Length: 284
Figure (cartoon, rainbow, N blue to C red):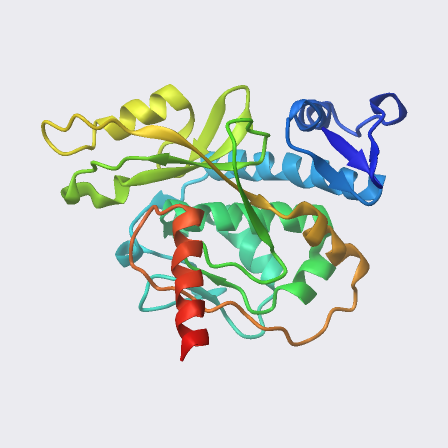
């Protein structure tokens, strides 16, 4: 369900800009969880950002970027420095927007694993939503590695099987074959119509992805892969405030990077590692 300024949303008073946004709106309304907004502008922002997330995932699926582990990561050195951990560090003096767009424009020069792919999609879709000027100002310290994200790209987590287009879900493969450890799971962006985009797999149904992962299990395994109820999504209300905070502060506290060297982990697992580190630092 949807609330605007603490009041139930009246669908008859609002018409989305695009047909696909209407489908997203209907999914928000039919959700048992409450989606709250201060004003209609915040709702419009979420609808637009979610639509752009699906479009960005579709564009990545059509590109030539390869699925790789961190050891095999590749990027265009014109825009990025490839770190020893397999991350992409934005070069000084380079436009963050141009660097993100290059991953799509010159996709054949790139290789990355599936968690990094989802963060790239989050940035690319946000760029489409807020525009180059604001994106360049907000994300001058881009570093692409697994689920590491900038503080202005706030990620929220929930547990539900009520997926909304633009949600990032996780297919878990607990009995994966160590020889193909990168198939321990798959981060999938929900495209709508029961389809998911997984980097290295493409846009497929959940049954297809589960069957694929089952084929990468240990020999004689009897523990099947499954679609979990964990969902990662932007905190749309928080991210929408970027539109009203220009010029932004030039300095901000960046999240610590967890270089775990484990391909294809969920956002949930990465956040657990991050929180564990913060708790350790607080205890010292």
